[in-house]
Structure formats: C-alpha cells, structure tokens
Image (cartoon, rainbow, N blue to C red; front, side, top):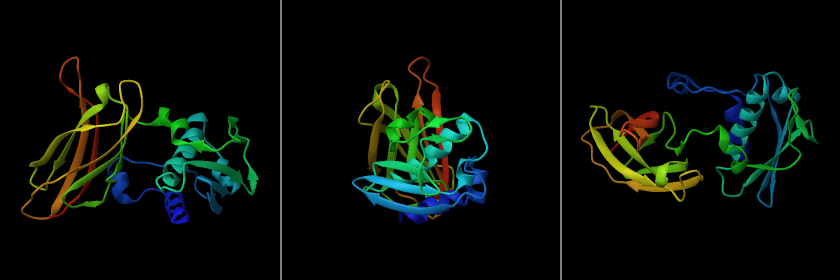
Length: 211
C-alpha cells in the first residue's frame, strides 16, 4: 500500500485536485525505486530526478509530501530518504540536511493551522462524516461544516483536537447527518477569530456527499 500511495503522489494531481487549487512540488520524472518498512521507519529510495530543481521551499515541501503520504499508515512513523540506493545526507542544491529519518513533527511548519487529512478532495463521504487530521488552533478547537448539493449545511459542529494554542494536536471525530439525495458538496473547516468573530484559516474540500 505504501508503494501505491507514493507512486500516486509522484503521478501528480488530477483534474479534481487541480480545480480545488492543489498542486505538487515533486519534479516530473521522479521515480520510487524501492520501499521497505522496519521498526516504524520507511526507507524510500528515489531516483536523482526527485532531488532536482527548485529552491529550499520546494525541497522541504516534497520531503513533507512523502512523509505525510507514508505516515498515514500505522506501521510508519518516520521516513528515511535514499537517492539511487544511498542514504541522502543533504538534499538538492540548497543543501537541505537529511541523513536521519523524518517524521511529521519535523514538517509541521509547512502545514496550515488546520490540516484535514480525511476526507480528501474528490472523496465520497457517508454518514457519519469522519474527520481526521492535525491542527494548531486557539484552545484546540475549530468549526467543521458539511454542505450538501443544495447548499444546506447538514453538519455544523466544533472539533476539539488533542492540543492547540501553539502546540500541534490531532483530531478524529465523527458526525451523523441526514440528506435527501446524493450530490456534490463540500467540507469546510475554519477557526472563529477570538478578536472579531470572523472566519480564519478556512479550508474547503469539495467532495461527493452520499446517503
């Protein structure tokens, strides 16, 4: 499953993801040459193209994309990167230091304050709506809404993460809903600003809403 997920990442975004504003910084021509998992560490061996082009942000972002792709699986906590079978101690022309396995906590500076892992763009959701991910929000809370094909909000609840207010936490919650017909909708997550009550850090995920 890990190899399938990484190869899907290397294949780039599809039209639905592009329409939602998603993009990938993985260079064209990148190939996964091998993947092994032992003691919670996935060793991912890429070809040279994976480390080509781009500045420091691109380099760190593509590392993060692989880390979050592989650590979605419970057997993986960190990723060790190899290029052509050799452990990468530096990465790309920017000299990004590696050499040690990389985990999610090493890459949180690239995340939005609310990182919704599931559902993803283009998924089909059923009741109960299942939300998972990471967040760093004021008092560890944020708002989650599910909007159906008619524009009606069928879920409108607070989500509480395991930590917040400067510390990253995780969330895993389910909310039941009722709709009259299947259709295209969206999940919207956001914070309510403690300063003025406005929506901040909003993330919109278009998807299919099913009975």
